Length: 398
Length: 162
Image (cartoon, rainbow over all chains, first blue to last red):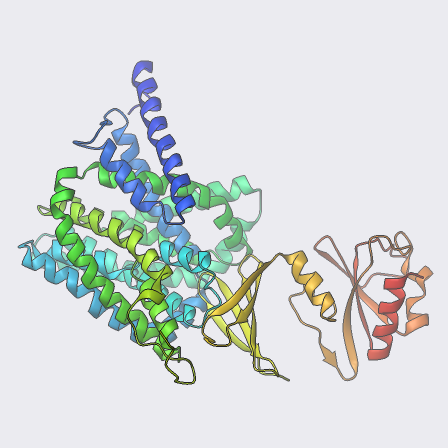
């Protein structure tokens, strides 16, 4: 425990954490200027501070590690918070078919690459998750920044994100149970417990979400903030104790909170999430050896190209179901290319595996490429060599 | 009634849109936090918005007023309803009105227009069934039940002063 140690250690810890956070603040400002997500910048900053980087951080590592774990919980919590029950149902209703295509097209390149690289199947399954999930955070920011929220292809994109996030509620606990491992019998028991726990929490969340929100609503902002934060950690801790991913517990707590409480909670928790999530991204790339990242970069580029195509096809198909024209369909395809926070969360699960370091380095490089390349491709989608017709079917000149 | 299409945008809000007589598509995106975007679709590529205009709650009210609609009050969450020739009318007392600090009885609204004041909205709170001694303040929104003519007369009376 840092704080029990002498004041000199405490001082050093403050200086370390302060310096890191200050750098992150500057990076967030730069990324805001450039109009892209800060996640890739945070990852690069983590490389600089971590093992083999420019300035290593030692004293505060255990504190940063816990803060990073909380960051994951808050990321997932606020994600769940943004969806209401009716939106989930709508997403499931309209997004199921594109969602299945999405899984088949985008998870398989990661899985196959993992096997080709000679990784154990579990690490390959994690890489499948990394390439599968588009970043809800990046995608919704791009849509809003480019003024595309009103566009006709946008519901297809958003519904696909809902499906992916829900799929995570099954994928994460499943993979977590598999990582714990053991004999075939133990694994089956753990997987069953994980899935049952998710179903129970989901049912309770949807059933008693209104009541929970009403109970939390009374009182000051301070009371709400502490109450929500406490519940999130408790449920996540409980889920973790059952070997279900704690992050999913937090996601389901977010889903449960609804109505006016939801808006207040989002307003109050967003700053906390930003702080802790930034810590998470930095901590993730702390553990990556920069030379490892560089050597895996060619593979990451290849994976980026392949999965940009497969995501493009997914978006193209999903928007087509809504009767959107070619321009809109290519907008939907390109905006989905961005991977981000979720891919890193998934890759972080594998840190204990034998192939964990390789997975982490590849995932970091991959997220760097997609989180920067995706929004750019989406912005300049008109330059893509795609067939374009006017609604009347007339080909555009040029 | 024109067909208004509604689309749920998960994590964002709800979008409403319709096609105008001239064939343009106009829509409004209501965000979860109450912010609204006015959407005008591109003629050549109707999948995309040619312009998106951010409207705060106050902006939306001004625009609605300019388009001739009565004030839609969010706290009630309902649009104007007509029941058997009666209409529910929302009228905001202007900030510089002489109505401020007078009671409902003094205004003789029902006697003069036939409209009954059924509620008053003040600073986001709704006060149902105010009595004759209820003191109106400038900035209050009056909710009244009246015939079409009565509603128009009451609107005229409140907006132009007693």
